[in-house]
Length: 123
Image (cartoon, rainbow, N blue to C red; front, side, top):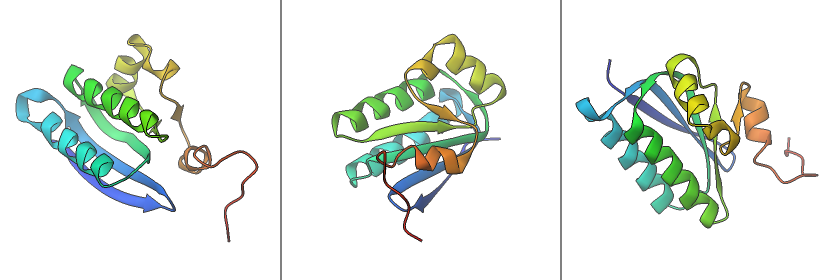
Protein backbone atom coordinates (compact mmCIF):
# COMPACT_ATOMS: atom_id res chain seq x y z
CA UNK A 1 0.00 0.00 0.00
CA UNK A 2 1.34 3.40 -0.96
CA UNK A 3 0.99 6.58 1.03
CA UNK A 4 -2.38 8.30 1.23
CA UNK A 5 -2.55 11.81 2.68
CA UNK A 6 -5.71 13.62 3.69
CA UNK A 7 -5.76 17.13 5.08
CA UNK A 8 -8.28 18.61 7.49
CA UNK A 9 -8.46 21.59 9.82
CA UNK A 10 -9.41 22.06 13.44
CA UNK A 11 -9.56 25.78 14.13
CA UNK A 12 -6.05 27.04 13.26
CA UNK A 13 -4.37 23.62 13.33
CA UNK A 14 -3.88 21.69 10.08
CA UNK A 15 -4.02 17.92 10.49
CA UNK A 16 -2.41 15.56 8.01
CA UNK A 17 -3.80 12.04 8.25
CA UNK A 18 -1.17 9.68 6.87
CA UNK A 19 -2.09 6.14 5.83
CA UNK A 20 0.21 3.48 4.43
CA UNK A 21 3.96 3.79 4.08
CA UNK A 22 6.33 6.67 3.46
CA UNK A 23 9.34 5.29 1.65
CA UNK A 24 11.53 6.68 -1.09
CA UNK A 25 11.53 3.54 -3.26
CA UNK A 26 7.94 4.07 -4.42
CA UNK A 27 7.88 7.88 -4.33
CA UNK A 28 5.71 8.22 -1.23
CA UNK A 29 8.25 10.47 0.48
CA UNK A 30 8.04 12.87 -2.46
CA UNK A 31 4.25 12.97 -2.02
CA UNK A 32 4.62 13.71 1.70
CA UNK A 33 7.27 16.34 0.98
CA UNK A 34 5.13 18.14 -1.57
CA UNK A 35 2.18 18.30 0.84
CA UNK A 36 4.37 19.62 3.66
CA UNK A 37 6.03 22.23 1.43
CA UNK A 38 2.70 23.45 0.06
CA UNK A 39 1.21 23.80 3.54
CA UNK A 40 4.16 25.75 4.93
CA UNK A 41 4.29 27.95 1.81
CA UNK A 42 0.57 28.69 2.18
CA UNK A 43 1.08 30.01 5.71
CA UNK A 44 0.26 26.99 7.87
CA UNK A 45 2.10 27.35 11.17
CA UNK A 46 0.43 24.69 13.35
CA UNK A 47 0.70 21.19 11.97
CA UNK A 48 -0.37 17.89 13.51
CA UNK A 49 0.74 14.70 11.77
CA UNK A 50 -1.69 11.87 12.49
CA UNK A 51 0.49 8.76 12.25
CA UNK A 52 -2.14 6.30 13.52
CA UNK A 53 -2.32 4.47 10.19
CA UNK A 54 1.24 5.06 8.97
CA UNK A 55 2.82 1.61 8.84
CA UNK A 56 6.36 2.42 7.71
CA UNK A 57 8.67 5.41 7.37
CA UNK A 58 12.22 5.61 6.08
CA UNK A 59 15.00 8.13 6.57
CA UNK A 60 13.72 10.41 3.81
CA UNK A 61 10.30 10.64 5.47
CA UNK A 62 11.88 11.31 8.86
CA UNK A 63 14.08 13.99 7.29
CA UNK A 64 11.02 15.70 5.78
CA UNK A 65 9.27 15.76 9.15
CA UNK A 66 12.32 17.10 10.99
CA UNK A 67 12.99 19.75 8.33
CA UNK A 68 9.35 20.87 8.35
CA UNK A 69 9.34 21.04 12.15
CA UNK A 70 12.47 23.23 12.11
CA UNK A 71 10.98 25.50 9.42
CA UNK A 72 7.73 25.92 11.34
CA UNK A 73 9.53 26.67 14.61
CA UNK A 74 11.68 29.28 12.85
CA UNK A 75 8.41 30.96 11.79
CA UNK A 76 6.88 30.80 15.28
CA UNK A 77 4.87 27.67 14.57
CA UNK A 78 5.18 24.03 15.54
CA UNK A 79 4.72 20.46 14.38
CA UNK A 80 3.46 17.66 16.62
CA UNK A 81 2.81 13.97 16.20
CA UNK A 82 -0.32 11.95 16.89
CA UNK A 83 -0.24 8.22 17.65
CA UNK A 84 2.99 6.92 16.16
CA UNK A 85 2.76 3.12 16.38
CA UNK A 86 4.62 -0.05 15.52
CA UNK A 87 7.63 0.36 13.24
CA UNK A 88 7.06 4.12 12.97
CA UNK A 89 7.20 4.50 16.76
CA UNK A 90 10.35 2.37 16.85
CA UNK A 91 12.07 4.62 14.30
CA UNK A 92 11.16 7.81 16.19
CA UNK A 93 12.23 6.22 19.49
CA UNK A 94 15.60 4.95 18.22
CA UNK A 95 16.35 8.36 16.70
CA UNK A 96 15.19 10.03 19.94
CA UNK A 97 12.92 12.34 17.97
CA UNK A 98 10.14 12.05 20.53
CA UNK A 99 12.38 14.10 22.82
CA UNK A 100 12.33 16.91 20.26
CA UNK A 101 8.93 16.61 18.59
CA UNK A 102 5.98 16.29 20.99
CA UNK A 103 3.83 13.19 20.52
CA UNK A 104 0.30 12.57 21.76
CA UNK A 105 -2.03 9.57 21.93
CA UNK A 106 -5.22 11.66 22.01
CA UNK A 107 -6.18 14.08 19.23
CA UNK A 108 -8.05 16.53 21.47
CA UNK A 109 -5.04 16.70 23.81
CA UNK A 110 -2.72 17.27 20.85
CA UNK A 111 -4.94 20.08 19.51
CA UNK A 112 -5.15 21.70 22.96
CA UNK A 113 -1.35 21.71 23.18
CA UNK A 114 -1.22 24.24 20.34
CA UNK A 115 -3.25 26.80 22.30
CA UNK A 116 -1.43 29.28 24.54
CA UNK A 117 -1.63 28.57 28.26
CA UNK A 118 -4.66 30.15 29.83
CA UNK A 119 -6.69 30.29 26.62
CA UNK A 120 -9.90 28.37 26.20
CA UNK A 121 -11.64 27.23 23.06
CA UNK A 122 -14.66 29.25 22.03
CA UNK A 123 -17.92 27.27 22.08
